[in-house]
Image 1 (cartoon, rainbow, N blue to C red):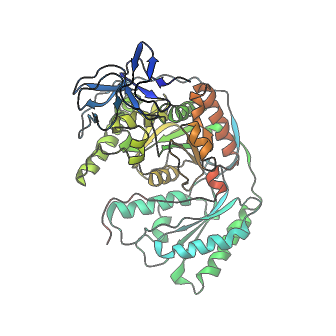
Image 2: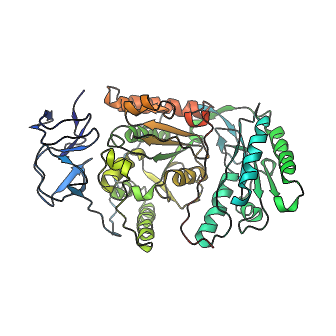
Image 3: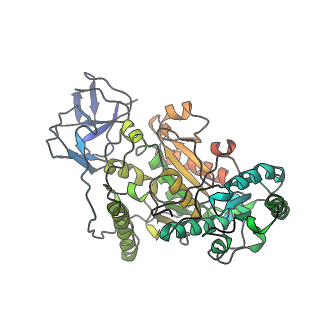
Length: 493
């Protein structure tokens, strides 16, 4: 196994593929030198002398500037590297994107819905409109496990602390996300459970649900009945009876909508897991399917790559607004926009937001950007979409589900057990994590460093996607993990 990886020929740094000690002699491309400092796995090494204020280049782009003179063979990280990012920018449109070849049609076994969408699960959901009824929802989830069987694959409740004492965008976000989830294609039946005095009650959720399939939805306001538990169980049993005989049928892969997310990233995420996901994205788009990339703050520093892949100038302008609106959100809250890499990211070798962003955007592959979605907006255009949402794992993954993703591909270098309202497929950036946390990880993209090729692994991931869409459970589902979080930006009364 090689000791260092230089990602592009333009880079003046390489990534250590294993922990290296000072004094080790190394060779990569045309560079041969002795390390002058210890370098942890996943971290960067200077391939040549870099003067103070000189650009540090990785992925072929600057990821920051040198805070001091950096000698060849030195460890490059937060101690000697600083971001180049600042506030809002002006951008020019330089469209550059390839045309993807059409792929041999693939299929999966799913549940067609009345609106033309397809579910990859047939679940019975309990959606509280307000945190005050969370405990009732959780008790109903426990009791309703007796309804699982036949076409009823799972019963899940999604407690959350929102739905009352909210104003403006926060209130709108809560109403929209709950309405999106109530009409999600993975839902065979849903009980929308309200209290009765909240400012985002069932009537506000229903009016945002559009032309929904009324046979699959029931509403209950707890303050309007004597025994809310028994009334709710009657409604759940009614929904379950309707679902009982439903079965999977062959469906084209073009009906798949997949969310793309990363979290707990390390120095290998942008080299292995995210490019493999990008390859999968291109394979699915070539099938006529849809992928959604989010985490807008983690696009900062790589946004021009996405902008130049916008299919039209109008889409370019929407992407500029997506980026600058999110920067404005940071500034309005008096927060710097570039202090993004988490402590775990930094420990794994990610030094600046540009470093993180250039790795993060690898998940989008090379397909053109077809649409840009507001937070809570449902996907309506096949192909690659960009979605406005923050980088927070659970908030962003919930936003992907609300936009219509039937499941989420989640790359990680450090590992995480969480899951969102839809199946959450964990993809490891390194083989150590895949072996150590085999109860969390569903796919090992670290094999890219062990000899497998990117096309091979992307196809392997496509096979896993089709199997998951056909009902194969991922680790988080086997553990029964499912959560929901809504983007909160303002005042709580």
